[in-house]
Structures are given as C-alpha cells and as structure tokens.
Amino acid sequence: MEHPESEQLKQDKLARYAKAMGHPVRLYVLKVLSRQSCCYSGDLSDELPIAKSTLSQHLKELKDAGLIQGEIEAPKIKYCLNRANWEEAKSLFKSLMEP
Amino acid sequence: MEHPESEQLKQDKLARYAKAMGHPVRLYVLKVLSRQSCCYSGDLSDELPIAKSTLSQHLKELKDAGLIQGEIEAPKIKYCLNRANWEEAKSLFKSLMEP
DNA sequence: ATCTTTGTTCGGTATATTACGAACAAGGAG
DNA sequence: CTCCTTGTTCGTAATATACCGAACAAAGAT
Image (tube, rainbow over all chains, first blue to last red; front, top):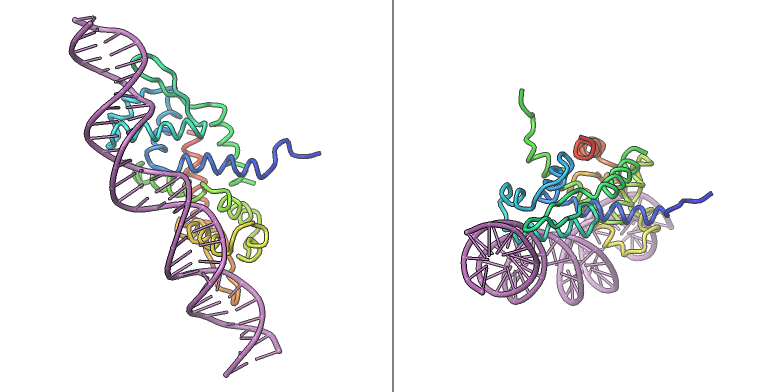
C-alpha cells in the first residue's frame, strides 16, 4: 500500500498555501471569506488602508494559490473561497500540527 | 468582556507564522521536529539537498518567527520546537479555519 | 597547541515581494 | 455615444528572499 500522494508533494502544496497566507492583508481576506459566503473587492478595499492595485495583487496571489476564486458580476467581481482547496489546506495543516 | 488580544494582533502573528511555514525546507524541519522531540542541524543537512549555509538561514528564520529554538550542545546545536508558540500557531490556524 | 567537527556569518547574485499611481479595459447608466 | 464605476495591468522603486561558496568562530579531540 502506498501513498496516493507523495509526502513531498503534500509538503510543497502546504508550503504554497502557507506562503499565500503569510501576509496580514491576505489573511484578512481569507478571514472575511471564511465567515461569509462571498464578498466584493470593493468591500475589502473600503476596509483596508492600501491602494486598489495592491489589493488586486494580493487577490491575484490568493487566486494563484488556489485559495479563492473570482466571478464576474459586472461591473463588480465577486470573490469566494475555493472551498475544495480551503478544505485541503485545512487538512494539510491539521496533519502537520496534529499528527 | 473584551479580547485579551486584538484581532489585528492575532492576524499579524498568524501571518508571521504562516510566512515562516511558507517554504518546503522550513516545513520539512517543522514536520521532523513535530514528530520527534529534537534534532541536530547536521541530521537535517544530511537529508536536504541544500548548502549548510542555506539551511542555517532557514533555521534562523524559523527561530526568528518563534517556531523553533536551538540549544548548544557543543560542538552541535540541538533544535527543538518552541512548544508554546507552536501551540499558539496551531490555535490561531484553527480559529481561522474552523470558526 | 593543532586539528577536526559543526554551524554561523559574510559577500555576492538572482529573483520575488510589496507597494504606489497612472493608464487601461469592460460594461452599465444616462 | 459619452460618462461613471469597478478592477486589472503597467511601469517603477524599495526591500526581502533564496541560494551558494568561502571565511570565520567555538569547542572537543589528539
């Protein structure tokens, strides 16, 4: 019997998730999204003391890491957690920290 | 009744922990240490395909983030998890991901 | 006192991150 | 069509990260 996924691969995945979470702004976004279904970029922009373009960059990083996803709802964009990957991240953190 | 610690502060702490965990090598070190009490830098060096100096840098980052601590046991250095902070990190991740 | 082992620190380089404002798209409103 | 709103992308700059080999420091071994 072997692993369906190598430890190495899991490690790299978790590192990727952790890295994406390694900034206060991105963590804030994730917190908001984990507590409500979705939100608009503008909502976040109102609450955060950073330029729109900077926020956009952070959202892109979260998207690239697979933690969130955006859906166009013109003229806005609705952001939600990527639930599947969020659960995966949770499970990877758990198995690291609660062996 | 209020928070003994502001949400903001917790967020920043978690971001700091997450950032420290955001690299495969550092994650590997943490995994090893979470499964055995301690280890020596040399043990890690043998298993990792990176220069000693690079490993040393990663260990320093983990130390600066408060996740590990080193104890001199000449001529080696024994590294252990910083249990208190490890538990704190665990709890912060939990409260983010399992609200 | 010299050698050896173990790690850290230094110097250097390449790449990545964070941030901003200005310019640019996309699409609804008037 | 022209304006307005919403976000992204571009250009740029400062700082941080990741990595290596060489030099250095500490302390036990010979």
